[in-house]
Image (cartoon, rainbow, N blue to C red; front, side):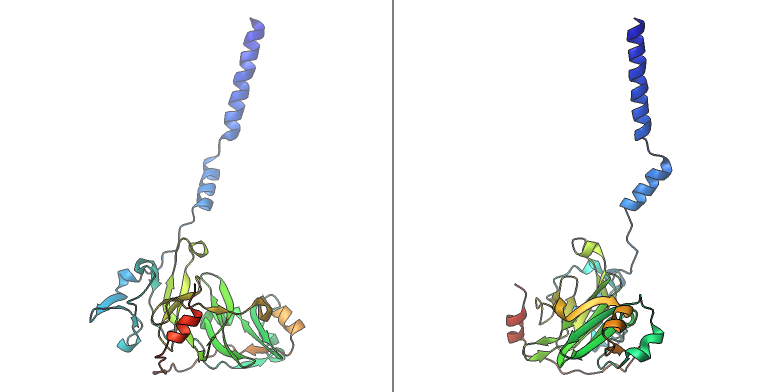
Length: 274
């Protein structure tokens, strides 16, 4: 009998110890919950702020105080309720004719660990600081004669170099004033929405294509990684002392008019994503 009682007592002690070790303190539980469920930052929801509207039976998206800046979104593939902001399409100084300086002249401005996008082709090398790109978000440029753009979206931490040459047509890009998110894309992060000045189509870089307008479905042309990289100022100045460095603090007067590309059929047929 004594042996049986002893065995039962030991079993109960072991069970109690297991239950105790599996318990989590309230602070630990709260920390685990906070880590697993990180609430999204509250951003202005465009549709709630009247950025979407109808005009003459055409679906429109606010583009600025001037009515001519609104976007025709009759064929928009994205969901209206997932757009954020709507500050106007010319609020960011997306550069059209960027100016550059030398590595030697820029060296006092940057720390070795500062982040840069570096693009190179032929004998030409260009360096764009992510800090400056955060302000411009789009820099329309040329590299060894090819139209390119350097872009960076701070919300999605997306930086890349793209070609702007579509067959015989060169496109020029800028910021729409909107961001967009999709829980199934880029871990649900917001990403900026671009527009091209030539057709006023909207583009969402997080899926790499135009999402409305005459060029809907046409893909963004990211340059091969053999021609660009995401690196640091220390790497740039050590390996490419001849690089042209984007000059900080640039701005310009936004153009009130832009030549419209009317014939888009060939471009769409050649560059539409399959």
